[in-house]
Length: 169
Ligand SMILES: [Zn+2]
Image (cartoon, rainbow, N blue to C red; front, side, top):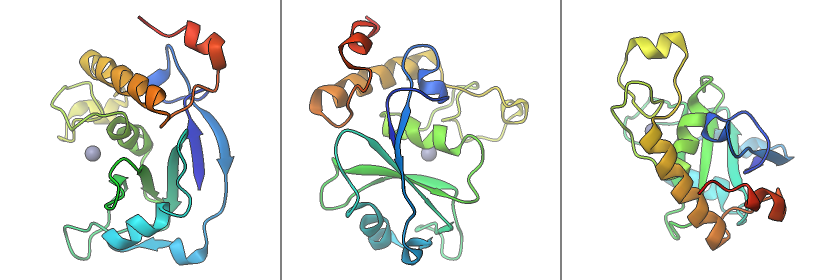
């Protein structure tokens, strides 16, 4: 289980202003190696969930719950009994941008059609050049979502008051 908070790291979401800090990384039990259905997605995060960090679970296989027999690279999942409880599940087949994409969802983004955005799932040349990030309106939306999560305690500013003083206007 990887726990991420909004401090130091490389995620393009915060590369110019705010970063992530890995606060803990713990092994998952072998029973969590394959996540086959919605109930298992719920059960994966439920015992580990806490407010104040973004939880990322890395598993061996993550089934596509909409297409029998298929697997997916990652998902931003809302616990069905309490949709304010959310976490990211990554499969070992996740690509380099999968975590960034799922964190985009975590920070309030839907899929988009911006050519430069990694929230745009359409196949296009930008995928090959590896220069995907987020579009400016998406950055703005994520910042608003981040600030709301900070106010609500879903995330904690680990940089403290100093970090808050740097908060963009
Ligand atoms: Zn997506």
